[in-house]
Structures are given as structure tokens and as C-alpha cells.
Image (tube, rainbow, N blue to C red; front, side):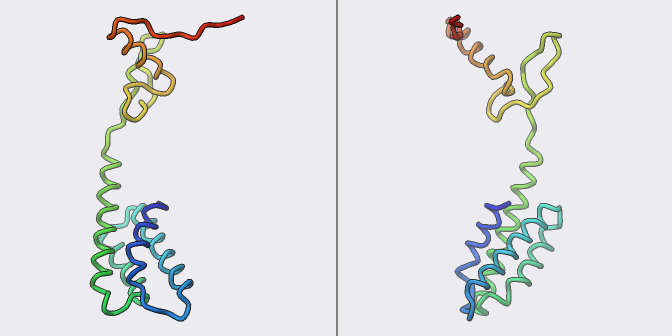
Amino acid sequence: MYEHSRRLFTALRPLLAPSPDPLATKRSLLRYCEAAVRRLGDDESPGRVVQRLFLEVRPLIAPSDALQALDVVERAVHGLHHAALAARVAPIMRCAAVNRRQEPCGRDALRGHPYCASHRHLAEAVAASSRGTLPRRPVAHG
């Protein structure tokens, strides 16, 4: 959430109208951006988030930049919404390992790997067997 609200804040900051207290204006803008990202995360419709955020930041924006601000808000909110949907739809891969009882491991695989953290050593063994070599095992000194 932090990075998304900061990205939105950074896009809107150049459009702020001059004010007697620029620090307070920037804090207000940041607070509005954080609230918008939070509302989007709470499954509020993107259209409502755009409308509410624009109404909140409009007094802080120079009148000549209002249309540009609306465009920035729309693009950012809809982009965040689509990214959130894509993240929800992405399948969660299960670990490809089989336990001692010959049942599939129930843990989630690491991103980009077929095995979970507990079974990632099996990836090395599979790679070594495909090369025709044995995987290296640590030698116990005792």
C-alpha cells in the first residue's frame, strides 16, 4: 500500500496550487492518497474511489490543472485496481514434492520454483541427476 499511495502522491504533487503552508498541503494530499488506496483495497469500486479522491484533492490543485489531476487520478486508481485483480487471479502453485507417506506436500511453492522452502533442495537433486552427477552433500566432521 505504501508504494502505491506514494506513487499517486508523487504524480499529483506537481499539480498542487501555491499555498501559505505548503507542508500542510502536502500532508493533506498524502493522507488523501493513502485513504484512496486503502478504500480500493477494501473492494470499493474504482469509480467511487476516483470520484472521492478527486473531490478531496480538488481544493489543493490549481484550477488550470484540474483536468490533468483528474486524468492522473483515474489512470492511477484503475491501474491499481487491475493490478490487484491480477494478483488475486494468479494461481498459487503447490509444492511438487511427495512426503514419506507418498502424499503431496501441502505447502505453497516458492515463487518461480516447483518446490516449497522445505523441499527446495530437491530442485538441486533433479538438476544434478539430469546432468549425470550426484548433488553435493555436506560432510559431517566429528
